[in-house]
Length: 113
Length: 115
Image (cartoon, rainbow over all chains, first blue to last red; front, side, top):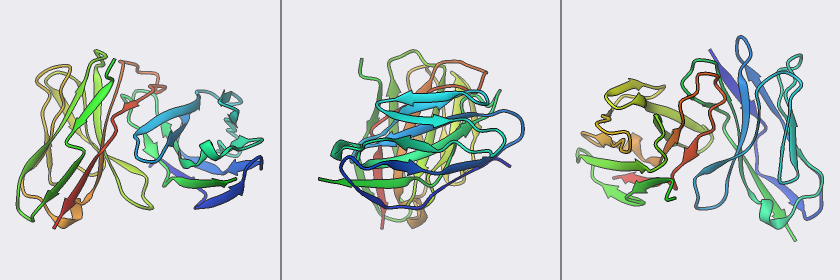
């Protein structure tokens, strides 16, 4: 079946550091890939997405590239801020799946001043 | 727009009690779903609906019932609560889209503790 594996946290960084969160997936065909973010005490919200191989999703300084050959969708940001402290979820969705998402376990990121 | 509204935000139950988690959306979305979030396990799909009168099971449906009588509302019922159902529950919705690229709008969550 489909699955998403992402690096365990927590990841603790200093402000302005470079952030990478690894995400790999297992799925047949060509799923859509997503990064959702959950700020403390809130629900999840979409950070970025990519729907086909070699697509790059970007938002708020975050980027992720859909790599079919390595089945990966790693999230990166060049210079994090304290406000980026959150839990980040990688997820996939298959065509005709009616929007059902398969989530990774989530990675908590803590950015210190 | 209110988006997706969940009530209650917090609830404590005793084993064997029943309750309903409410979810309402005002975006006229066809698709609605319930997830539970547990530490180290991400979010897992409980039930989903692709329109009024249509529901189906997700990955972890046991112990939960749903119905969808209107486009706006999608309540989740626990008929006999068990400690294993202690979790944070999220309702989500999205427009109709068969491409798989649906972007879900999530509610703020309902934290349930079963003693």
